[in-house]
Image 1 (cartoon, helix red, strand yellow):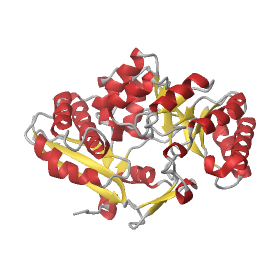
Image 2 (cartoon, one colour; image 1 turned 180 degrees about the vertical axis):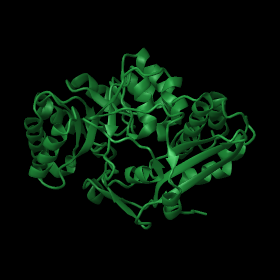
Image 3 (cartoon, one colour; image 1 turned 135 degrees about the horizontal axis):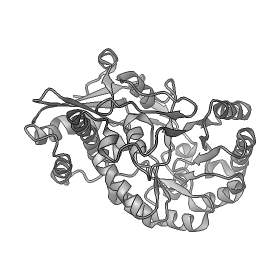
Length: 392
């Protein structure tokens, strides 16, 4: 079997000029100030999702994705990575990963190149599983659990405390045994902002009761002193993990915070490759959160799982989507998955639901995978044609 074509199709976000999103770009530890510390920013990035197809001479086409609002991935795949792989054996997945990694060292190693590699690598695993007539999870360990338990990743205090608490209670009533709240306050909001966040945490815990796992996510907004003060204020509410309290560059800060905190630390959404994860492991981060369509694909996330198992850590992939659910189904080091409902307003998530058919919906806080070969995706060509954009 040989690779005969690799296609990358990038889908445009609704607003092609800019996209106002939740992510804060300048944590206090980086000296951020002024408008870049208000908990939001405008990203001049029109891409929502890149869909990758790897076609073979055996009639099998594999599907992969590149997330992270990455307009560069399209050019990297078509201009460099695809020519490297045409004519190669698509089943030699690890060798192809290493080949791409070494051939892009002059401008790669992290960032957009690794994200582009992720899409191709996922498509190669899809090909392998289809060739074997098996779901991907059967190739990486089989069904270690009959269903994937999920945490609802939806809670933000942007519609008022009463609505936020009601949303949490409704999710618990719908069967979710875990959920996550995204902090919107940071050091720029002062003591009043901190008090408001602590109130939200207290009220959510009261609404969902003591048996529902409750995670919180600071999304790289804090510095070390602020993180310590917040931990002191919320630890009594039985927090399952505190996610991304610090910049991913602040490895020493993560180490010091992990030593200090009674709440386990989670991190890794913005990391790339197993080498970044080894740093987090050594810093005491317990919950590792690779985004499979950014971190290097399946080949790299399996290496991260091996590191995690060796060091007694858990892997909880960032984002939902079928590729994450296959990993969680198979790997005993993966206890839970992230879940965004089908009409979740964040652009990248809604585009996955639109472009790729067969994404499973949660039932009683869990999903169960089919035994379809590969990841189980099918392209929605009509949606892709409607939203595809060229950056040439």
